[in-house]
Image 1 (cartoon, rainbow, N blue to C red):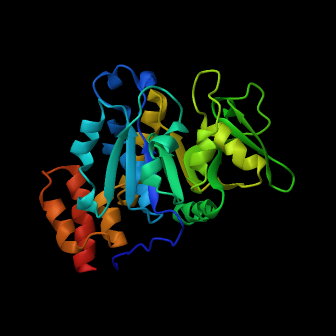
Image 2 (image 1 turned 120 degrees about the vertical axis):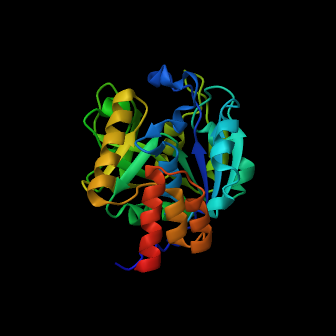
Length: 306
């Protein structure tokens, strides 16, 4: 089998913020001693999934935002990202001030360019996903792009309602009586103007800058676009023990039955050409004898024998 090389799409987004803060209270007691986003989803930390998802879009510059206590943990995992051909920076969010505050914290990192924002506990996988992500990212040239997913419990999410022509007409946050089952997932693509739009938001009743309000501003201006994740894709919001177990089971089944790796930054960087075979082999050889190394050894074997 020929070694498969991935070609990153040409989109306006080259920077991404991963929001990985919060207390993870719904995962107590597991989160008493470790940041939620470093908990394992099958065989790797949760945060590896959104990171590699955005690598597929061609993003190589990342800002991880978390609480001050967790930043040293993330630094131990990622360093500056150069081992994977990335640039990873860090910033802190003090208190539960809302998802949209990430744009203000990351303003210097965004540097007046289109960018992506992803919640560190959101996991995506499926056929055609990179192409769908690229299509959503294109809307960041002068608007906003979001991904939606049909759910059975829309009252737990921000819900998008569209008209007969498929145009967004309403966004409701955790509605008691949903008019749609189309949940807006935790991955967003924005034009640089979103920073000033976030700055102009009024905090909600719970004292937070709501990402739903920011998306509503774009919608009311006719600048919000969505891509629907279909039956060939899955989305997990891994904020509860049930969701954490379900996501781990799903990843385990797919990896073992298809004999592939999901969300291995080393592999993604290698296939995208961010690192060469020598660098990839150096990383693999530096790992202890474990299942994670075994997956990467299979990739190396494919690259050298295919």
